[in-house]
Image (tube, rainbow, N blue to C red; front, side, top):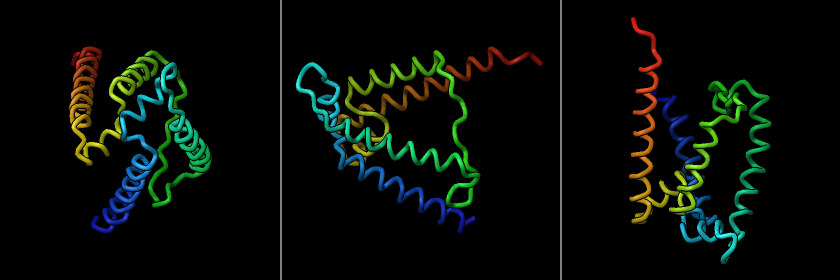
Length: 151
C-alpha cells in the first residue's frame, strides 16, 4: 500500500505541480488576462488562444496514444470517456462554465492555483465553485431518489 501511494501519489503531485506552473506561466491565473482574451470587441488579447491551441494539440495526440493502450504508464487501468453525446446537460453545463469564466476570469484549475497564491478573488470563486458542486450533488441525489423504484 505504501509503495502504491509513493508511485501514484508522487506522480500525481509532480503532474499537478507541472500543470500549476504551466497555468502561471501562461497567464491563466490572471483574471485580467482571461477577461482581455474574452473581450472580442474591446482590447482583445489573443495570447491565450496560443495557450489553448497548444493544449488542444497536446491533448489530441495524448488521447490518440492513450486510446491504443489498455494500461496507463503506471500500470493502472486506462479509463477514458466513451460518450460522444451532445445532450442538454452538456450544453447547459458548458454555458454555465463559460459564463462563470467570463464573469470571474477563472476556471477551476487556475482558481485553485490562484487560491494557493493567496489571491482574494480566487477565494470567492473557489467558495462559489464548491457551493455549486455541493448544490449539484444535492440536486442529483434528490433526482436519483425520485427515480428509484420503491421497495
